Image (cartoon, rainbow, N blue to C red; front, side):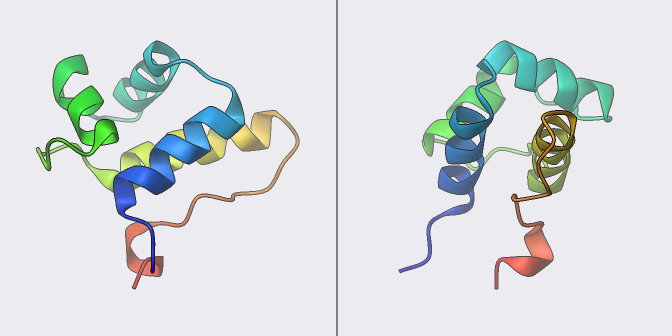
Length: 80
């Protein structure tokens, strides 16, 4: 069974060791426009609101690169 998109993102956030607030700020810096509440609900799997999976994936991948890792978070077109 393939994990849901929100599970991939939340697992990556925990693995990267960044807080929700840090991720939200990185997401906003990349052009994301969802409120913190909408993004939190998306990462908890309780909403499918307009968050922008690829923007979150990109923010997380940038954090991993900053930590000396590769790009472990797949983008939307790689999830199929």
